[in-house]
Amino acid sequence: MNHRDTIFLEEAPVLDHRAWPGDQFVLRLEAPKCARAARPGQFVHLTVDPLLPLRRPISIQRVSPQEGWVELLYKVVGKGTALLAEKQPGDRVSLLGPVGRPFEVNHRRPLLIGGGVGMPPMVFLAEQLSAQGRADDLEPLVILGSEVPFPFEPQDSLLPVAGVPRDLVATHPLLESWGVPCRLASTRPMPGVFRGYVTDLARAWLEALEPEERKEVALFACGPHPMLEAVVALAREYDLPVQVSLEEFMACGVGGCAGCVVEVQTETGPAMQRVCVDGPVFDGYRVFA
Image 1 (cartoon, rainbow, N blue to C red):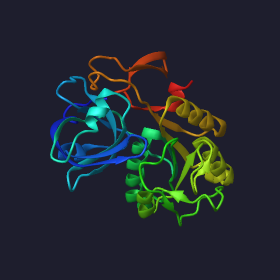
Image 2: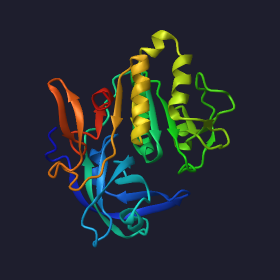
Image 3: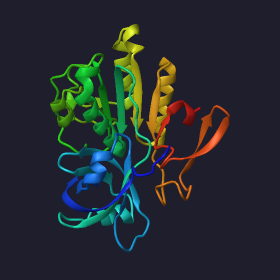
């Protein structure tokens, strides 16, 4: 994939920074070049502190090309993200992005599945699909899962979802405002939230579809490795296309160091590919053979 003139370096002022339970943060940065170029599934590489030279990769949750901002969701998991969590409005962060191969949607019924900090690409993709949905007659469904409180205030949905009990109505308020059906899942008890795994909820929806409707489904997922493996197994069970966005540790983030390689099945056999620029979005069957 040719990345020439598609990745930008910007000194991005912090516009807003909000903390959520579970050490989760939503960070909005002023980065107009990145905002204009970003596509769902891509990420940015941030310098979180001058004392830490290695950047941190963080998925893009939303962008506004008109207002010039990029929004990120991240969870504090180490020293770097702990330092990032200290940033205040007006501080500046060095941003490199957008980086990576985005999702490609070619089916009428996209099923978007996000778990934990894998939720941002699904929100980004849902917003894009809501904008083109009427013109292309798309009918997306989003399923988001978390084992800690969600990094937003769930609300009751008025948008029905086939196969889902009527009392399970908790949804993401932004997606509801975009007219995109969404349901939430967790193994922990939460009001209006499906009790179980995201794949259990996805299977209930798939089973409720007519066979001809099911043929129009493609899966898109981002989240922890075991979740992605389960999503690909579900896609294989129903013989559906599936794209996954991988999360790996990265040093350079632009393909130079090859420190984020994963084994991918190709037409000529197994090959090592870089998650940062050959991905992070891959055909799920090629990663989980």
